Image (cartoon, rainbow, N blue to C red; front, side, top):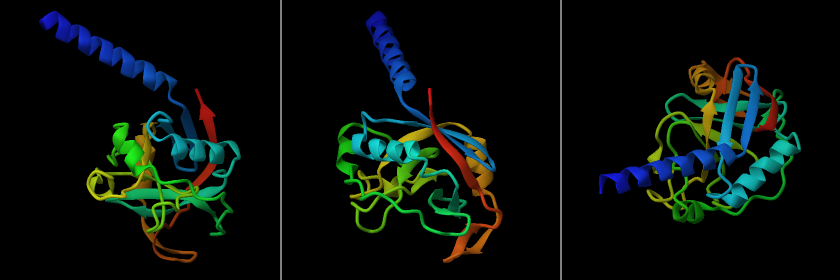
Length: 191
């Protein structure tokens, strides 16, 4: 019995390692340092496809983290340093139920999710990285939730640096804008 349990655990760990090795990764080079995100197309296929298309089209290059709430999340991907909103493609269909059914990531520390309005089907290019466990954003806790589709695998220290920056008003936003701009200089798919 012990052997079967150990074998099952080994196979599971090997399978998870293989899945992680195959998961696409995106490197955000920022003025605060590099952040590498691993995304899961098997858990949230439409969301990941949408995100990777924005990466491939260089949409994120030159955008800023425009909303930083130190005990919640850091948000970026929509505005340049002058607070011009970049044009986007049509919104992606919300996949909260899909992520739940696929046992996808929850909104825990270090996961990335799509930002949206109150309309669950309004996510376009903006994303946020959770800086704490935000179970209240999960489909399981409060449908429709926010679709987490990957996680930080390198550069969590950079995320922590950004979340700790002083914030205030900036552009059209009355609060939560870093006083020193954090610019995504490039976003690239890496192996």
